[in-house]
Image (cartoon, rainbow, N blue to C red; front, side, top):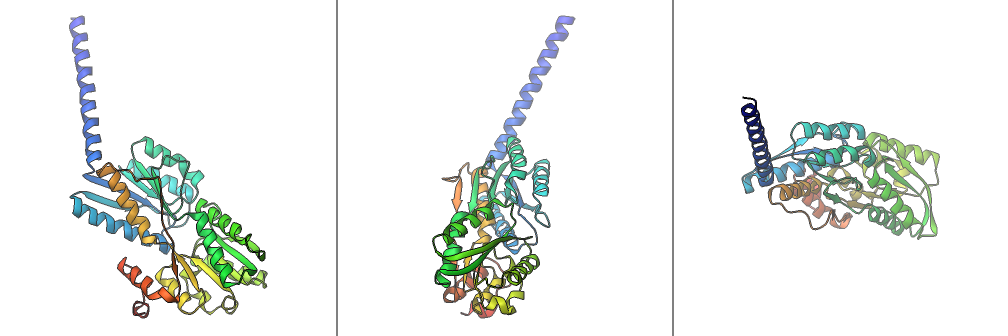
Length: 339
């Protein structure tokens, strides 16, 4: 009886192992086929217009791919209200526990989210970054501008407006964001090529229009000899306050980003040059890249997918406005569309 019981026990264990292998194989096959793909989108803050645009692009791509490939692609918005890398890490863990197949994230602080990214990947969830990378993590791809070049281009355009001389300041957002750190360094490197230019300082702030505007006003009061600004993010231009600021009107400004709300600054000459990121594509390209990996088993040619900046001036203001409209932005003023 003991030998028979032992044999039966071994047979049951073998059966359970076989069932487990079959279930795992079935799950892997289902994920490989990508019939249902749940993507968690975690940007830096849910109040920043650039990330709301990324959300629109992600949801549009999910809808299109779902219809085109007869799959169910969903995007869950798990972005913190304000920048908070610890909360981003929590949201990654939440996404994994909720059964997400992929995470698409812009990292507020790479050091604080890398562990959560790696844990997610180890648990079978693919992770892609956009805008702000975590290069030491196990993410499979990053999509965004070359941040060092972005800083260089911003300062180079400012140098052109200022004829290569004068005191300038750099508006730099979150000091812990790796993408912004690289932009600052690029701006400094470019300024060093112009002996007539000096940098009054690099000024960080909470990434809201109100905080950014207040920082520009504060710095202008503290350094009345500043003649130009390099905004490596367009935060203060997401509000209208600086349009009527007398000090700003006398300065030269070049800014990254080119959302509808910022177009008035170009029209009125307050900011002659915007270096626009196609922020809608953060979400669109991110979702397409993830679906290609999970559904079609295709990795991108390189882990770094570079986005090109678009220079926006009065000369192409209308064309850029129409592009924004085509991407689904509903707040583009008609006067710009008719240019």
